Image (cartoon, rainbow, N blue to C red; front, side, top):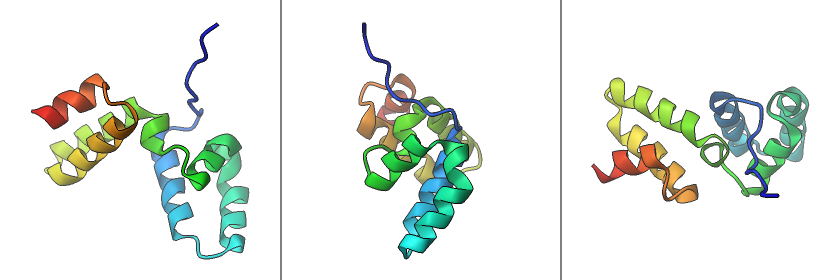
Length: 104
């Protein structure tokens, strides 16, 4: 039986927000507070993957990341959108949406 890739229940925006909080943490106490506050929301496995650098929000929710990138494009924030598409391609080199946007 083929294994499905890990995909947390939490949406991309929640994962991205928590990733930002993890990046800003300056101490173990800061991380504990984030775990208590957001661990149940994003899932402890997703939290640990982000904390350990094993996966990014774009790796866990690539389609939602592309939707967020498209929204940035509509707002005229093309550089940020392209960076997001490239983060998706870092994990999924053949992702159809991200690949078409970056190669165009």
